[in-house]
Amino acid sequence: MRLNNKKPNDRVAVALVLCFCVVAIASIFTMRSNFSQLDLDSDDNINIAQKEDQQKEDFEQNVVNPIPTVDSTTSKPDAADDQVKDDRKSTTSFKVPLEGQISKQFSVEVPIYSPTLDQYVVHTGIDIQAPADTQVLAAGDGTVTKVYNDDKYGFTIEISHGDGIVTKYSNLSTTKMVEEGDVVKKGQTISGVGSSALFESLEAPHLHFEVLKDGVAIDPSDYIR
Image (spheres, rainbow, N blue to C red):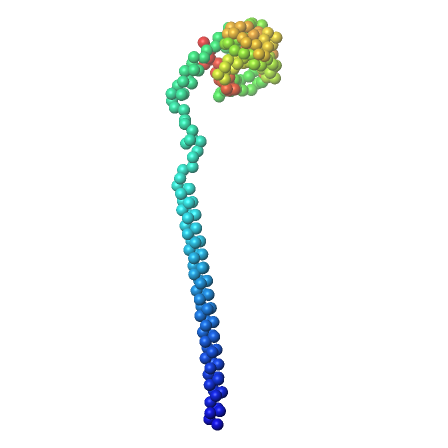
């Protein structure tokens, strides 16, 4: 009887041992899998941190390095260049286009009273007063570029003298003496004094004379010799 009771107990013990082994093996595999996942996560975190450090370093370098600008890459003209321009301006001279009294000076900074408009306005040329039909002469050698009737200053002739310099003659009596494209000489008659300027119609007959450099009105007295 004792021998028969002993066999079932042995079987139970063996079964328990096998179960324990299975559980132990499963636990080992699970732990290894977790450790591997931890290593991967750790590597990813390291890579992310390295990328952030690299981006931060690149940004700091971009901030420190100066950005090239037009001023820093383009050479600026020195005082010698400015002197050459001043010398060129001083050597350019024109003949007085009309012998007469200057009745109104060039003034673009301080407005001058206009009797016709009854208000103060800037004056982009000089007015030379003379009897009607007095001959108006070309101030210098050049090419007639425009002949037209200006809404403000009446019959107008423009002559280009090169180097961006243009002389403008307004309030003329006629535009029939020269045509666009004509080459004229200094002192050549191009028109006569008139009263065609709407904005100066209440003033005595005179020539409204302008000098433009690159399209900007400048004081004609700087060029008249």
